Length: 396
Ligand code: ARG
Figure 1 (tube, rainbow, N blue to C red):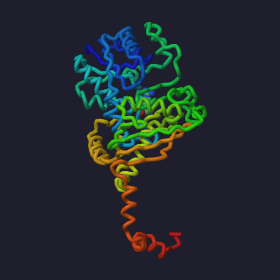
Figure 2 (figure 1 turned 135 degrees about the horizontal axis):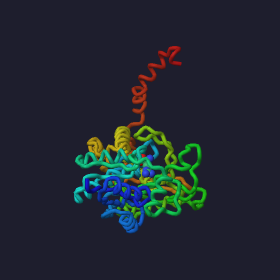
Figure 3 (figure 1 turned 135 degrees about the vertical axis):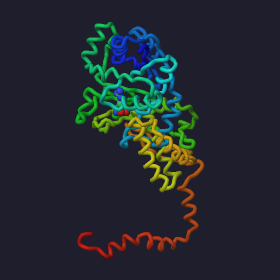
């Protein structure tokens, strides 16, 4: 093996791993940082990678692709894993994997390495995607192989002259446009309220402004296209909404989550834009889809969400489900009015522009002779009434 392509974040863990890969495998390490909106200094990351020993570095801006291809698909699917988590980390993994493969092919590397641990979902997501996209490529997971503790890592970094961040929070953080995932340290105990320093994108709800703020979100066939009446490109819309909602303390999630690998863990997230957009989208669907469509689509949404969460982005079922979702979104067009206030997010108004079933069903109903409803009720309740007539002791 001569060359390894490595997913580099710029943090201490992955910095230490660059050096470890070089020493253990005697290879060239080519680092890749994919910008999915993590708001880090890419130039500084590149300099650090080269300083620590990478032979070459790639910075890839994938924000637009991430937003339009991955995040908008998740809005259309109302994707909230276990009713809570908007998949912010999960959605980025297959995209990052595809960029790693692109670089690995270009560089004629024999292996791809990532910095995930052996206890989480991210290793599953990366590796399933990598295997599907580039079956010929070897996969290396230094954290799993090396089994390094934080203290050993710091000692190793010191020995090798790898810069150690001064103010290091006790959390494992993953950030992108769709949210911030915070794990570890004091959060591991599900009984303890998350300390305030776990949050960065949202203000403490009690410190949020004393007056509510109203915003509107515009959708075109299920896709978010406007904020407060202004048409906006995907990345900008998400960024603006993150800061707008975050300022009102909206977007905090404290969740007990079932990981793909079986663990049940406490997870903390900040996802202001994701929660707001999904809530608004779901509301607009209520006005535009029939009850049968809503009921069935909910099952499809759950399955889509599970595939993405569990690392099966590449499963053909995901695309097949999307074919249904896409068809269902025709006409999910309109505007939703939202009130943001001290950590709460409420839909307070919605207007469908091309199809409003509340309006049209009411109109049709006006033309029906009201006395006919009496007959409908007799038929509708037939089985329930029949059972209650023949009631036995067990039924009571
Ligand atoms: N539990 C979340 C997920 O599986 C968040 C993972 C966060 N990753 C991290 N490296 N901190 O999607």
